[in-house]
Length: 125
Ligand code: FES
Image: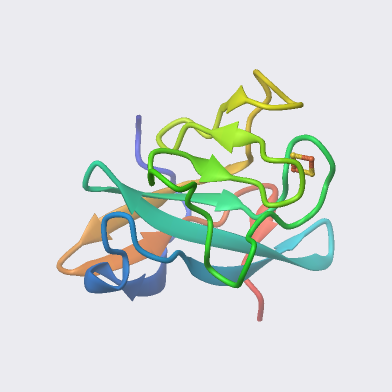
């Protein structure tokens, strides 16, 4: 995937995202409102999504930063149990099967994780 043209913003240290560990949450502006996003690591790759279930538009973590199912193979929504594939954000089980989380592009460089603002997601100033 080509690198986005907007400048990347520092999100966290690479070491803050451990395989199977808690997510790092961060705020973004979407359509003028502050909403939460989260980043976590799966198969050594850092990924980030908006913290909004594709079933009902609500935050998904059962405690702050807790997004993993029991096996730490899927992101799980604590409300009705939708399971999402971590690399793609696609729902692979539950009431919104086939739908996707909103992805936020990341890059990881020099021990630091960065996120890319886009047309939809802007930094909180
Ligand atoms: S709100 Fe997430 S599965 Fe229903």
